[in-house]
Structures are given as C-alpha cells and as structure tokens.
Amino acid sequence: MKKVIYILLIATSLLITACSNSSDKKSNDKKQITTKKETLDIKSNDILLKDTEGNIITATKTDKGYTFSNAKGKIVLISFFATWCPPCRAEIPHLNNLQEKYKGKLSIIGILLEENKDNDEVKKFINYHAINYTISNCAGNQKLAGAVGGVRNIPYMIMYGKDGHYITNYLGAVPEEMIDSDIESALKK
Image (cartoon, rainbow, N blue to C red):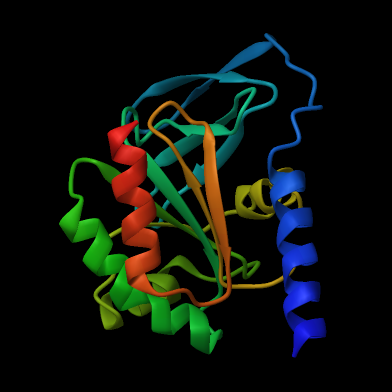
C-alpha cells in the first residue's frame, strides 16, 4: 500500500511539474481568423478549441498557466475526459453542481479526448447527462492535452485562477468537496 501511495505521489508531482513548465517560446506573430460570429486575433502559440455549438475558445499560454477567451475574470476548470470512461461520467453531476454553485465565477470546460467523435453524438451525450458546462470537441483538444504536459490518464482536471495562473490538478475521480474547497481558496486570491 505504501508503494502505491509513493508511486501516486511521484506521478502527481511529475504532472504538476510538467503543467507548470514555462519553457515554451513566446511569439507575437498573429493571424486573424474570421468565424461566423467574430474575427479573432490569434497568436502563433494559441490553441484553438471549438465547442459543440461551433464557438471558438482561444487557450493562450501565459508564464504561469493558460487563459481562455470564454472565461475572462473567472476561475477555469479544464476537465479532460472521454464518453466511454466510467469515472469521467461519474464526475459529471459534481461538475454540474460546481458550475451551478459558482455561476459567473467559474467556467468548466470539458476537453473530449476522443478523436473524430461526431458533434451530434457528443450533443446526445451532453443532453443525456444534462451537462451545464462547455464541451470542446475538436483537434485542438489533443494539442492542449500535449501542451499541459501530456494527459495520459483520465479523468484529469486542471484549475487555473482568474488571471490564468496554474492552481492545482486532479488525477482520477476526486470528491466534489475537494474541488469546491480549492475554488473557494482561489476566489479569495
């Protein structure tokens, strides 16, 4: 049992180190992308995500984490998941509760790690589970998973503060109360 706990502690510390690595080069190269709804200025190091409604979310690397264009001034909880994953499905009601409780202060973004999943199928999954937070379903999801240090196990969540700085991460199913406590602490900062 001690070996398992020790291995989990090492794995968690490696993930935290990988997530806070700021060795990426900054680039001011910009391009513009025009969507149905808006024109976006995109830096070359930005990662573009697209939700199931076709809205573009820009994930921008900062010195201490990431900011997300759809969550300015909010705490962001990124949840890497798959529809076939039982622990991922089990955490959905808890994420729904947190999104409702912290409406206007928290933005949860589900990052689907299944390639080539049809949006209609994902929307059925969202409706079936009554998901009340954003779900991204695009090729940028894999890019973000790699950029945060590589997501090897799911569910995996990362919390960023209102200014985009990394706060913490969660590997596997975690109690809602633990995430709630971390959100409360982040709101006080």
